Amino acid sequence: MKPEGWQAQRRIESDYDRAIRRLLQRSWQIIGIDPDMMNPWELIRRIERLANTGSFEHFSQAIAKKMVTQTFFDTARTWRQAAKGGSKGRLIFEALRNEMQGPIGNTVYALIDRNAGIIRSMPFDLAAQATRYIQAETLKGRRHEQIAQELLAKFPKMTASKAAVIARTEAAKSHTALIQARADRLGLSWYVWRTSQDGRVRSSHKHMEGVLCRFDTPPAPELLAGEKNVGAYNAGEIYNCRCYPEPLIDIMDISWPRKVHYGGKIVRMSKEQFRKVA
Ligand SMILES: [Zn+2]
Image (cartoon, rainbow, N blue to C red; front, side, top):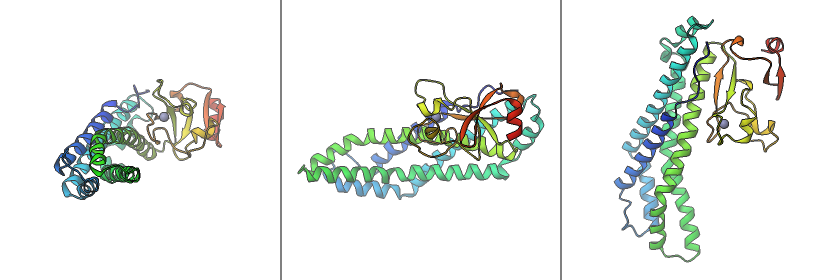
């Protein structure tokens, strides 16, 4: 049986976005970035100091853990739906049991570490961005007080836009990683590339909708669409992408003939042709 949907729940991304923004906002208050600050370099020093505090590390870890755990349960539920009544049902149910002890557990811990690291690096990114601004404005002969005031005014927007990109990109990457890890364990190599099917899907990904791909030989969607190549990756694995993989559990679950990413091209195959290459 085909599950209702393999797409990630938007709520996981928006919770993650909000949690990151809140941590950063609270942190600005803690380190004393206040409107009275007159020296922009002091601002930079405080931001960098913040990133090295134990509590910032602790909260980065906690926020990352929450997002990955939500994704872990969300994707497990979809796998269980997929297992119901399907030919590989029992196999999938067995695999979902005690999975934290095996490779899935390792994937979960790696995803938490990766995300915690990204959140921890945010203050340094913001500091670097602010440093460039200070240098450019100082060269123009602007006063330090003025630059500091402007930076303080810019911080909320800078933080929010970074948080939004991280939440969208990393929630989707974690989602794909957890689908792929379970597929690997079940010996399922293929998936159908799915887009969110709305106006915001980039043109190179529109071409991928419904295409069968292999997890271990991802396509280079931009190259396939005649655009500037940005490398090969699976659905959901590039910045701001909301695509997701729909694992091919049974060849009978999908309609044929179908587009298949094979030999670096997208070719149309019948079920029989696909059977030969799969
Ligand atoms: Zn996409």
